[in-house]
Image (cartoon, rainbow, N blue to C red; front, side, top):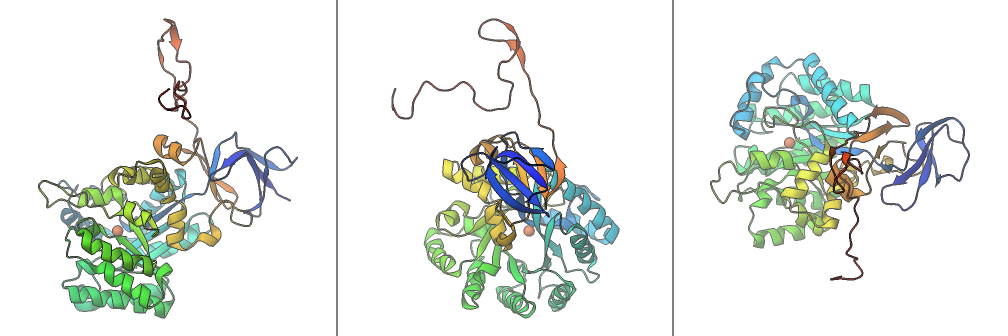
Length: 447
Ligand code: FE2
């Protein structure tokens, strides 16, 4: 018995049209469309595509919407970004963080993101941003699912003579879900390796996941990903461990990369690339040829290793753009990673949905299946390819059976002189679909 029905939808990855019954915030039934009579609330699906919500696996919510405060990052570099952030940091208050994050979450929800892993800088003795986000995580629970990474932005051992470790552990005691590290930023390689060990020790002690900012630099000598993978393998923690950014992998020589991939397959860890930011912050010291600063997303995917995609930043000192659209993230990755083959492009959609959910270890409550939370999107798209190409809005965003965001579909008309000489409205409307068909049949090559 369902109290809400979503009628006549297609479901991503399945053939046919369905009605979805929702009860108590969960999916109670999925039946062939039109085969049941039902009462109660009905949401007309109109043949739209139902898909699970987007999953943002890597963002820094504590710094969102601070671009231009107090000054814009005019050079666009990582280093000017750090300078601008250090000028903004003294003005952080709990109210400031909560107000900015609240606004950014609305942008993200409007576009269908309902699961978020956020990093929070804990190299701050007051832990102001962490306290704010812990409070917010509880406030939005049941609508948006937030995981908090205790992230030592200025290093574990390099921050105030090792005080980063103390603050990192305090953040876990206060309730952070994931332990972070930033080995390539530590003063020495030795500090970097030790920081990874400390991170894994804390994860085991407090039973938390691991997500390391790893090798976010164009230096081909930065090889902390091999340390992260080895620790994960030796401690049997692979599925609980993520390496974020790994942009140096885009600069490794192929002989080393070949050896590394053997280890990565065995270690079974997750990867997150952030195409909008990686491509703008990296390569800044190159003249030409200029590197893309992007990790080997296509090769990781081809090797059967779980890889997904995130924003990193929305309108902050490191990236002054963005609206929180995960389709924009996937679209950029498809271009920069040269994943324009049909299967490759569709995999980019998986990298902001199913694959991100796997990284966050939330698969038990993610997906359009009976028994799982009724959290889904309705979009006007034919399939994953069409979704990525036209990037239509999420017309309905449902979380736990509640409609939490709606977008009216855009209607476009063109007025012009058409081929038959008539002046008037274009015949097809303009939705960027191809309506004219093709005289060439796939079964008759060359016809
Ligand atoms: Fe990051």
